Amino acid sequence: MTSLRIIQITDLHLGATPDSILAGIKPLDSFLAVLDALDQDGHGDDLLLLSGDLSGESSASAYSMLNRILRDRDKNVIWLPGNHDDLSLMEEYLIDYPLRSISEIGSWGILTLDSSQAGTPIGRISDEQLQKVSEGLTQLSGKSILVSMHHCPITLGCQWLDKQRITNSQDLYDLLSPHTNVKAVVTGHVHQQFDGLWGNIPLYTSPSSSIQFKPQSENFSISNQPPAYRWLTLERDGSVNTGVKFLSNFNQHPDTKNTGY
Image (cartoon, rainbow, N blue to C red; front, side, top):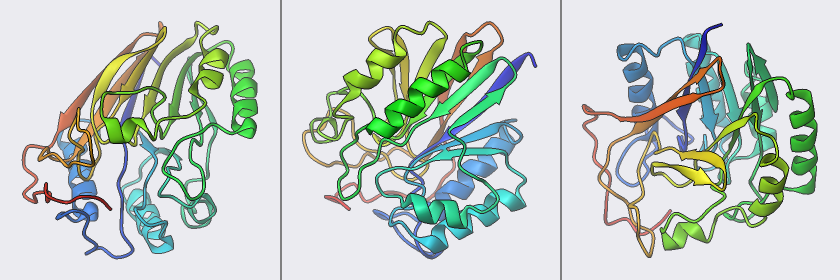
């Protein structure tokens, strides 16, 4: 394997029915448009990383619908839960895609975490998850590592969203940062792009396949940006190349006056 190509799709917010609407758009339509764009952009066979909030309302029918779409398109998928998800329902209805906390692919390892807490949008890495991180770092000691979770560990200058960042992110950072083979962390939740550093670790957040949040906003605010995905190329030498692609031909427009969901 010369390189590993991954497509991060996040915050799908699929509803219970195909016609479900979120802030003026149909999340199923926008997700399907992203999948079609991947085919057009030459990414149709890339590994998909679905980084949480796959359903907007913890819907069994949404997970079942998602499983069918991914299976029918013969996708290779890694997924993790977000704060709008129900992990038990995901494991039950994403029947063709068992949860994988650790994946080993060539010279790379992918470590996926659950940063969600029941009943709150605020992120936290539980003691159980921290133990899994420790075990994963040991198992993947000979590989370059990509870490993914739903919530962002740092503030981005978006005041209302910054309150939902991982509350004990320092505990996670203290585990990860001594390991020079941890090459990047990728997250969802913030519905916007960020490419920067978390201490000494490259950190990337991705826009949503549904609606986007307005950066640097004090209160909940939706931007007029279209659905998007992030591509990552993980090189054999441990380097990471990445970028974001916004769809140019999606004809549904979000309700930017929406004040929350």
